[in-house]
Amino acid sequence: MKVVAVFAVLAFVSCGQRSPNASPKVRLAVGGQNQMVYLPTTLCQELGFYKEEGLDVELQDHAGGAKALQALIGGSADVVSGFYDHTIQMAAEGRALVAFVTMLRFPGLVLVTSPQASAAVTSVESLKGKIVGVTTAGSSSQMLVTYLLQRHQVPVDSVSITAIGSAATAIAAVERGKVDAGMVADPAFTLITKRNPSVRVLADFRTAEGVKDAIGATAYPASVLYAPREWIDAHRDTAQRLARAMTRTLHWMHSHTPEEIANRAPKAFRGEDDALYVAAIKNSMPMFSPDGVMDADGAQAVRTLLAGSMEKVRGAHFDLSKTYTNDFIDRR
Image (cartoon, rainbow, N blue to C red; front, side, top):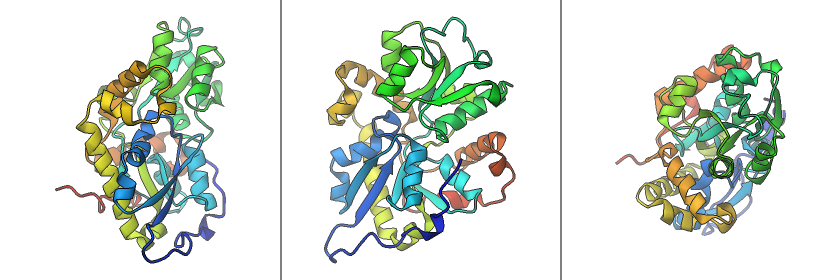
């Protein structure tokens, strides 16, 4: 994954001059707000938990996790709501990003065929010579596709990878057969399967069973809040408040029904079919962490997968424990 070389000159410490009594301002880049894998980030705002923790949070919506990371590197964001694997990729380049609250235990993505290709594409092996859609170039969805291809001994260069975005653009690409298969998240996946019962699921990363079948791991932490170590060291109280607000959101989600969760999501995310959105939440609930804690074995599983598909990770020497912390999580 290519990153901008100006990382070292980021303005990590200052978010601008503010009065002593003002709420800390946090620019939070999200890797695709309309995807359910990032729903806690938006729900936290809708529930008022950021404000209750004394924070002024600006949510920035991006086309994918790679774009959110670029915003951080470019200095226009302080924190990212993105996939944990980016902290490992950056560690392999000697850049210290730290995940400090975990939202997803599993990636929550599904590799599904288009209706037009479902008869011919019956397995990952069948993707040779085909077109596969991912959210954006360099995204976690592309990394997972790459690993799946390698695990099933399909030459990566024999498959054409193309960016299809998320939500409406991803749905259109899959349903119209612009790609033979696409890596999508809910609610897009639930909508696609409802309208196209003939599509075939090649890998389902929403549950422990699906992750085990796809990559052989029992845990694979995905969406997290991460920030540069320099920013966290300089803003520990703000990081603590963010972690507290997010864990409150996760607790709220696990103590409310899918219908109640859906009612608090922005209407723009739910679309025209509220029942379908509720079904998507119900199907995806296993992926949400109940407590925000990063599992050490899960972190190792992510590194192992990345090392299998990325040379820069495979040959790098770094302390995995430095890519995450549970110090800000109240585990009482």
